[in-house]
Amino acid sequence: MVAKLPEEEHPKQAFGWAARDQSGLLSPFKFSRRATAEKDVAFKVLYCGICHSDLHMAKNEWGVTQYPLVPGHEIVGIVTEVGSKVEKFKVGDKVGVGCMVGSCRSCDSCHDNLENYCPKMILTYGAKYYDGTTTYGGYSDLMVAEEQFIVRIPDNLSLDAGAPLLCAGITVYSPLRYFGLDKPGMHVGVVGLGGLGHVAVKFAKAMGVKVTVISTSPNKKQEAVENLGADSFLVSRDQDQMQSAMGTLDGIIDTVSAVHPMVPLFTLLKSHGKLVLVGAPEKPLELPAFPLIMGRKMMGGSCIGGMKETQEMIDFAAKHNITADVEVIPMDYVNTAMERILKGDVRYRFVIDVAKTLNP
Image (cartoon, rainbow, N blue to C red; front, side, top):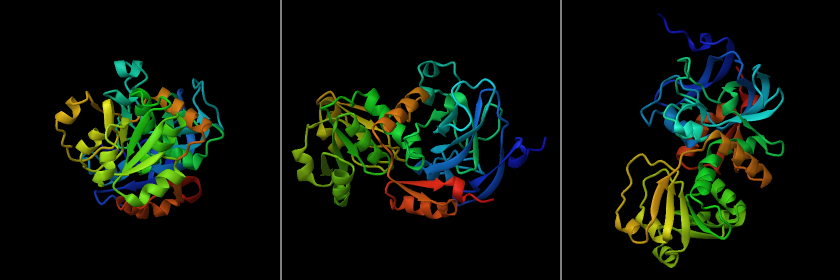
């Protein structure tokens, strides 16, 4: 049996940009989306954020990429069609899709509204859908997803600056809630002031938490304190600063994706403090036992959040006027944007203006 071309797999013609090989270079790409089934929501894509994982996937740095790859899992738009059994959405609604579009629905994680930890969770792009076809992401003109995996975007939330919350936002909101680092008066550290770190500061502050940003870059202090509202700033390479802050933090959200020393971070924690990883360094981290044992400290991890919590996060963001700091770009700038992400030259998230700039 001959494999169908991407534009022949499904009845709806679609257009986007795709990576074809490990160079990661993206270029125009014709493909197709499925017809809107009874529980599906179809929407016109208006904006899509660029996540660092889009770059990893485009270049196959995690060794799992299947080409052609249409990245994008911070997708927002306007509903154009709903299936006959869709209950929560109607044509014209503002909606979003984050990192996943499917799960098994029968495991413990799915029953607990933690589809993100389902062993059969289906990623928004670069995965196999239930019907065996490839999932394509939001660097494209239209999207179709099941109602369960659609997020309602409140009217007062800016669509372009709100898009990155569907990945970066939930990635930091979920551990703040789950690990109990959301109580007013607590003191939480945020390691790294990038796409994840800057929204972590905003969410933690909105929860009433005191926030210290921990960074290797002294020049980010003004940005952290004056623009993002952090209470204090530590240069992680400055031993005097780190020493003076020993034992002051209830918890730390570590957003850094490069290998970095853990022990100095453990010393900042109070007894029973929690260090939570949300960044994913490519190589294993060195983890001596004593800094954990002395003080009954914990180290954990967290990966996005379930659909119920993602909706809760978006509603919280709208209520507290939290958005990402974004640079909106045209579709044909995407390869340059990827190069700039590699250099850390973005404050703090690129968002593609898909509706206005994606031209076949």
